[in-house]
Length: 218
Image (cartoon, rainbow, N blue to C red; front, side, top):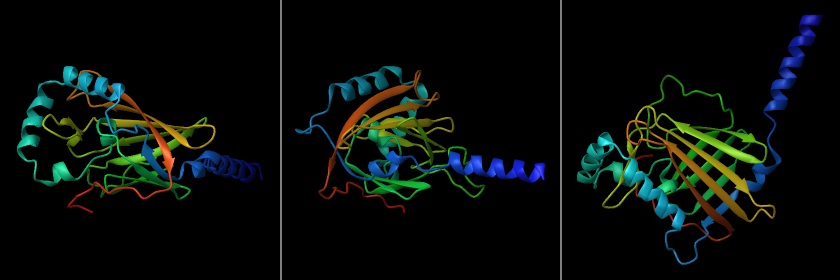
């Protein structure tokens, strides 16, 4: 009898821990970069400068290879973390135990089981393996298990995605629910001396989002 009650308590505690946060549904919708004139924010420019000064030789070498293959899927299939170096409009769909984030014409699925590991059949890709959890009123998403790509395109792409790479995103909603603050921490010790941090701000929008994806992969 005691054992049965103990099992019930464990199951109940587990179910309670997985209850959906009330803010999760409020995050759903379409979000637009808050800079009105389309110029790059001071914080973004500082982030890009820091990435350049902290890039190591392995990053420089991959950058040269990446730049020489600009027409392949590496440059068209934007990766998780690309919001850091190239903030764009995006949408959030709340599915309860899963959140879908769509940006650059691609949808990344985030499991709300933070301890969930990828299955044996999983193949690393540009979007990586994303898991999320709530810390107070802040949504924290961790993404790992990438294939190599770049978090910033252009003449000086910023490479990212070695086996130890990790992106941590922290989403905080304003009190009125119409502004979203996104803090991104990127860590790739094979390419950069230190982790990179940047913060972007978004406003809720009802209009359609532009698809900037041209990805040849599903």
